[in-house]
Length: 328
Image 1 (cartoon, one colour):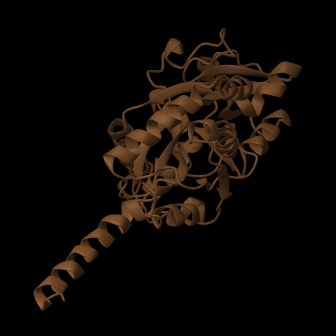
Image 2: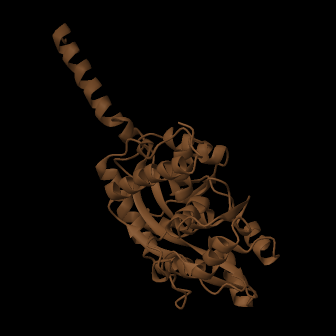
Image 3: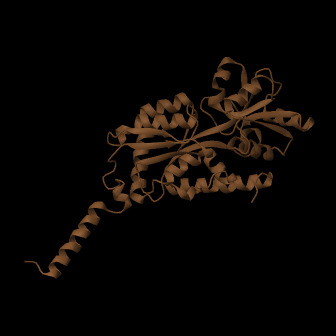
């Protein structure tokens, strides 16, 4: 017959074993035996857009590197990405839920459209860059960025360029180029989508379009558009001069990477990074990158990626203040 002290000892021992078995939130969420269930990639981007396609490419290739577990894409739109971010943030310490983060996310943080900061998530890896470019109709008189800006200086307020959104990553990318060019008076005409912005330029409603290669690729192949300059070298456009090669010392880009919910341990973050690295180096994923004409720009160091995002928010806020578009 056990004494009261012995019973107390066994009860405490049982409680300790129970805590070890259940663990902290990390273990409950499956970190110890990761992956123990399907992986969810949260995308708050427009279905069919570049970010959504990246999410789906990851979901198709990743299962072989996640021990055969299914990888599903969950589209959660709304609130300029706030709906998806809120969901991801709410899955604290769960390595089975990831999000594809982009430059648009940091701009929305900078503007205050969404109540989140980069520190609300666990950075894992940056995957790709999507350099901005400026394109014109094939019959445009402009042959270079200098031609475009020289005309803008001679006709203040009459030269226009179409692009996605107001106070967007696209808008800020062009604003940075405009500042480097000496602030010629070019009208930014905002559209709800990059494809619409390109159609506007094709129709002669604007003098040029500020966009990414994927959006104009078919128009370039058809010969109906030309590119005046690219922010950074693009493999598919080897003969097009970069902004820097044309005298503008900058290279604004759209970028995409993967983050996790808050509270992931260093072990979980390292494990996820290694699995994602194997995924993006897989031949099938490389085929997607080639077909999508995306540029690899892998940032493996998770802390560096987190710092990159924080700096993007700070830089965007500074530019928005200078343009009078941020109310502190």
